Length: 153
Image 1 (tube, rainbow, N blue to C red):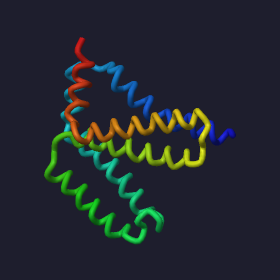
Image 2 (cartoon, rainbow, N blue to C red):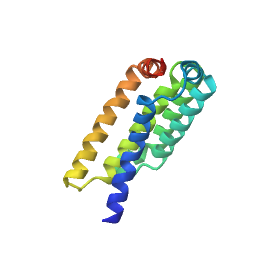
Image 3 (tube, helix red, strand yellow):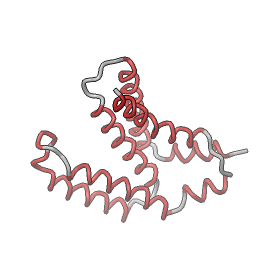
């Protein structure tokens, strides 16, 4: 039971930290824009997220397309390199979405077979988080606009 409650707490920690940074922005507007427009930060966030995703692809089971993991790894690696080379806009927002999707996958996998009401609430939050990640991939500029709007004083 202790492991279950620890996992439940750890599952809510990443979204709470992310949402607190989005809704409570302590920085000034200029520093927020400088961070959001920094190519180094954009590339670093996207590279970390792509490396995490590629690690997940390398460790696929046979039931999860594991027989094709080398082909999938190569395709996603080339896709990540192409995004870093040719797509310079909003890489950090897309990297953040990758982090959200990987977190939601881990959390939902850990909650398989748990049907108590705290786990159902946690799974619902994870699915909302997945929708937020999909929204960030489709409209990455909305995250920048939201952070700039929140930093106005």
